[in-house]
Length: 157
Length: 157
DNA sequence: CTTGACTCGGATAACTCTTGTCCGAATAGA
DNA sequence: TCTATTCGGACAAGAGTTATCCGAGTCAAG
Ligand code: SF4
Ligand code: SF4
Image 1: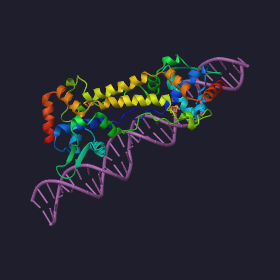
Image 2: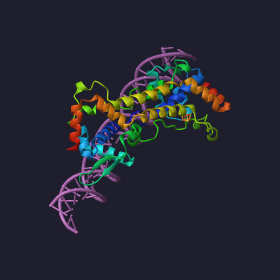
Image 3: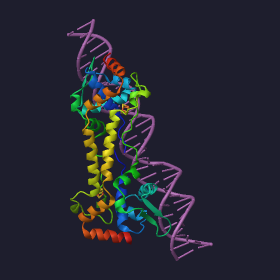
């Protein structure tokens, strides 16, 4: 039960991109967070495939968010990086072994799979309730103003 | 984002153990579900370490549940097999890079970590609401009675 | 229009964790 | 006492994730 570590980086990048406004290159984002720029590029690729960011090629290029910050949920980012398939995957054990249940009797989903599915839905629903804009508002409230201003200027330079 | 596949087997074993009453060996459980007995033994070990089942050694030994079925939640089994640490692990990115926030200003948890923690709690809460007894009741209602009786007899033999 | 340099994108290795297997120590019964 | 049977932890194999590289494409300047 381990989520891809890139999710954390991707979320940080989304926050930074929303505050920047202008396109930001992957190298700058990597330097800002002090992480491997090669690997961060991979995460940004995934975000691009999911349609959350748009990449501009060539000089003065970089990444920009495609939607407003309050239109991007944390769940969007998580599913873009970590995939959409649920954590629990049933292998239909009840159809195997000496006491196998014939497939034609397996019309109703088993309670185990239902409980897992319900929990997974609750998890996703909780993540869907938070948007990037919420994160930004909270960050602006809790981080020292001088650091915030410095980061903004550093992104533009 | 992938849960250990052994969770499914462990849950099935808990259901079977609750219906059996008498100690059941790991080999029988593996044959019933048609899975690797060596690997299933590992899962049962984890259940034993977590205190959910008690192992009886020697002849006519096997595994027995330590509590009543309605006192064991699905969350207990998941945490026993898959571990208790949350899926999201923060690496304190904000304390790195050129715009690092000094550690003494990081007293309040960041909103990203809070959102993830909240979702994780919702997920666990949903799993905690379902007990093994609930699963058994649902299984007894949905599976054909002849198969259920056969399985019980097969476990005792 | 040419040039140039800079950008992302997908294909490619190293590594960690999960999965799967084995044999030895301990036990209950005969 | 002895034996057959059980679980327990130590030991490899495989998959998945992490990390990296260089080439195709693009924009801006001269
Ligand atoms: S009984 Fe439920 S959990 Fe088990 S294999 Fe069938 S659907 Fe999956
Ligand atoms: S800002 Fe939040 S998510 Fe990022 S490293 Fe700090 S605590 Fe973790």
